[in-house]
Image 1 (tube, helix red, strand yellow):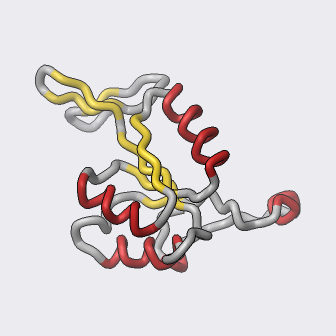
Image 2: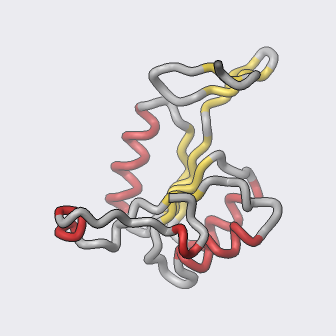
Length: 127
């Protein structure tokens, strides 16, 4: 059974608001323009609303302005790292419930081929 106010579809989960439907918002935090372009294209084509920033500082501003439903966070960023940003988000009552997922881009592909699974749980990420 679906939670009240939510519907499911093959695309993004959409929240029902009287008279209006809103696509789930994803904040992509990555300083690599190619990653941003590819990820934005993929997620937008699936019905998600995607915002992107290239630094932890810009992410904090974007989150305060319009909290996302999910944060995709690179760990290697200019200035403050993704690790630091994640810890701060999980320590803040305003943002601690926003899921944070790190695609694990810093792990060499060969580690995945050996069966390694990246998890940022030790620094507060949800996956």
